[in-house]
Amino acid sequence: MAGSHKDAPEPTDSAYYKAKYQSIEDLPSVGPATAAKLREIGFKTVESIAMATTAELINAGIGEETAGKVIEAARKSIAITFVRGDELVEIRKQIKQLTTGCPSLDTLLKGGLETQSLTEFYGEFGTGKSQICHQLCVTVQLPQEQGGLAGGALYVDTENTFRPERIQQIAKRFGLDPDEALRKIIFAEAYTSDHQMVLLDNADEVIKENNIRLIIVDSLTSHFRSEYLGREMLANRQQLLNKHMHKLMRLSRAFNTVAVITNQVMAQPDAFFTKGVQPVGGHIVGHMSHTRFFLRKGRDNIRIAKLTVSPSLPEGEVPIRITEQGIESDEEI
Ligand code: ADP
Ligand code: MG
Image 1 (cartoon, helix red, strand yellow):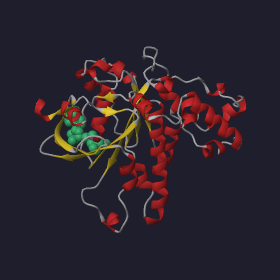
Image 2: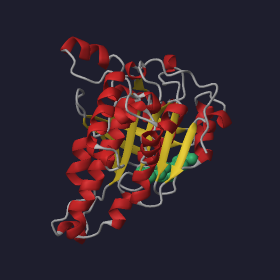
Image 3: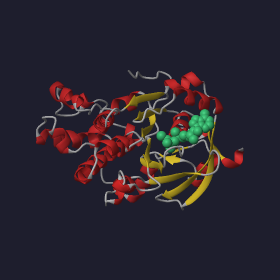
Image 4: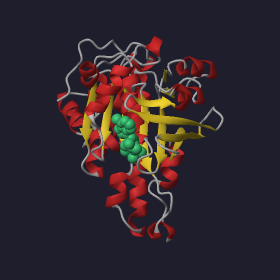
């Protein structure tokens, strides 16, 4: 099981860490019994309770009144409330950028991937989505002067494609000790969509203890795709995906982390999709991702990364190359 990294720096750069209450037991109206119930359903930190809904806490057998009070206290504790525009500027200053380690991608992003926000990489099988995820697990560990976030990564793998050997190769390129780099990655394989959701529901403590600054779900949609087949299951699937992405978003904001999801799409919609069924995730995944990259194959090992959606950047595309060392700008070779 994941333990704390003693050498990990303290996460002092987030406004969200100036919490008044350190543990859930410190919150008013939370006695040992309530705390146990909260932990049982995955609310192990003040941050996660601040992001919870009353209904979620009521589900755990906590009375409505208590639930409301607990959430309010948690929110006040980490200062999530109405803010003035100028204060918003201050809060947004907490947002950090993470280098992709690939100069052309960073140029497209005017720096890198942002914390407190969701970035999606979508494309066909073999276009490099998982390779990019591997590389980000390494760059997140770099010091801030080198574009990293001096933190760890949490990797939820649904397709059994995470390879520690790849991390070791990429770590060497960035001058990190390969074994040390692996120690800063917390890995979980999700066996079903339910399991995938439970993993995120229980992730808050692991994120806090391990100074996680990057959460990856690779792939977000594969289990949902295979388990929820046919039109009649579509609404249910979309609702669950929506809930799952909300959870990821909330973790990303509460802990000031980068959140990355991957989504495999078909070039040629098959008969199943042409019968009026949306491709997996469809509008839900697209609408909830703040930044979206579409990856497609070029010649040889070249991939084209196209920035298709961003809240503040223009569209654009760059060629990238998958090599032994990870993802590189094409012109670097
Ligand atoms: P997906 O988009 O399906 O997640 P991947 O990220 O797994 O795709 O990318 C697979 C591609 O990465 C394959 O074309 C493979 O050849 C390439 N690749 C994987 N490892 C290496 C390596 N060590 N050197 C060069 N290319 C690699
Ligand atoms: Mg993959």
